[in-house]
Image 1 (cartoon, rainbow, N blue to C red):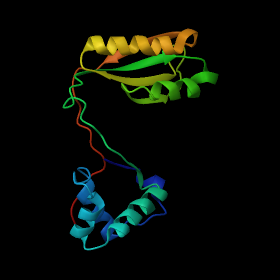
Image 2: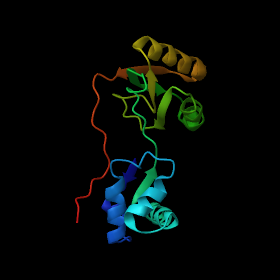
Image 3: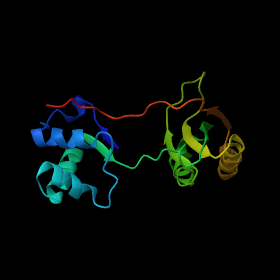
Image 4: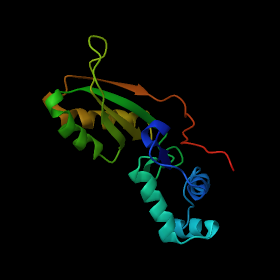
Length: 172
């Protein structure tokens, strides 16, 4: 997956025709081959080093935020997931977030601001399991990890899959 920045974040970078072609070739994902940069290079008529350099340059200027694998959890058998929210002390949120984010059943974990008095939670973690019971067990594991730092929590279970795509460029 290519995660692209908004234009205002990358004002100082001018996309070249080759950059656009590279983004268009990868907007559905990198080729699933052993040497994806080489395959892209062959398609573009450049070297794999040039492909890597273009990605690195676009990333350095903030045009691309990251290049990452995005597994389809449902195809891997993880049919249940829930966004957990936690109220933990602000001075420990970074430390605790690192520990939760390292768990193998958590795909992402991040801090968000509280919106008191309506929303007290400041730590979010997406939990995946083969069943809702698995997710509940994982949530209990997080609660145990947090111990007395867990002042409150809640979970929002997913009910449907939303289409997830990054930036899409039209052809030239």
